Image 1 (cartoon, rainbow, N blue to C red):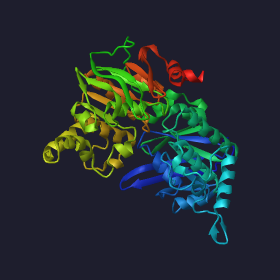
Image 2: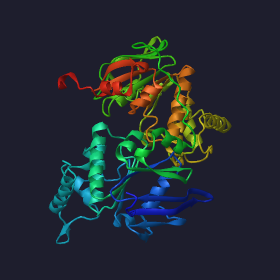
Image 3: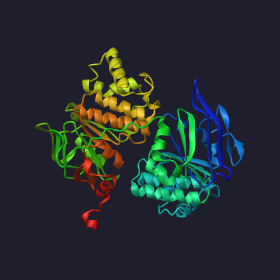
Length: 505
């Protein structure tokens, strides 16, 4: 492949923000008909490089060439006109418009000067069929799953003479079947000569779909490698610049009983269109991993245990008392706190400072009439910034400007400031780099060793096994198995997670 001229090439790319260089003399090349992964920790420069390619940022130094010609894009629209399109983790289309309207937006076919819905639907149908997608072009986009919306975004990109497709964390909200469908489309585009830049924190997916990988660290190029020639442990070490500290083993030789005296018990817990008839025991100082496919009921279980969703039936018992968790505030007052899988919508308040984000829940619990003294708030936030190694350690910086991993640490600091007894974490490492994942996994282990009880939900089965003492398997809205992590492998856990129901044979 190296003998072929790169379709897109960055040479000596440098981007500065003030005195800091987000990219420093980085070389990057992308060949036609390849899938190329861009890897690095949060803050390594991946987003900056993508923005430089797609016209969202200007280079301070260096050159960008497309098909051998030097180019400078004034904005992303100019890049799109040149055949470079981006599909983001959060689809940037219009859910209140039809599939066809989204695909043809800005390029609507007209007849007699008037937009023709019939021609628009026909054009969209042809594009969708060309990708092997069975989607009604006249249906509302918002009525479809995130996976279908992403595929529609790809169809829109193809409609504009696509040459380079950038996929930024495209699989973070997809289940196994949806990932397989996305990969089918990627391989189809690859066969047509489209160059694809695939950005993901899922190493398994990078090794499955990518031909080549470029590693960045601290805004500088570490190297470019053929994926099949680079061991995974070597890739991780190149990203981190150091060996990966192993997360401590936590599996205990128990099966259907919690590790310590039960702090929280659930019996027959059911919620509307969510978890059904769930029994669960969580021991003191235990990490209970929860595994299941997307839509299996993992999040419904977390929300039912923490008062976010009201119960239709069942009993939750904390210590020796039955409790009525009718709101998150009530759960917090009893020492049960919840971290949502959606960091942006339900977690970080991007415009507020790190200080305000960390102290938000504590101030809310005390009430607005009992303001925490400013000096106390600052000391408290600073102690958590230091304890969790939140970077940069700037209390006044807007939290939304931090990397994903550091935003997750800010959320954890907010919850830990409440001194909870039970911590329910829904996908706490989604969308963050390997180094930050290791730090958060180690933090969970330390919290448990200090007596905190943790429910840890993750789509990554190896992570569930690495962190959990026991694993509860959720399938079709029910907890079907609870097994000691030490008795499971990733393959055996996958078999439990994906096992068909009794009515499926």
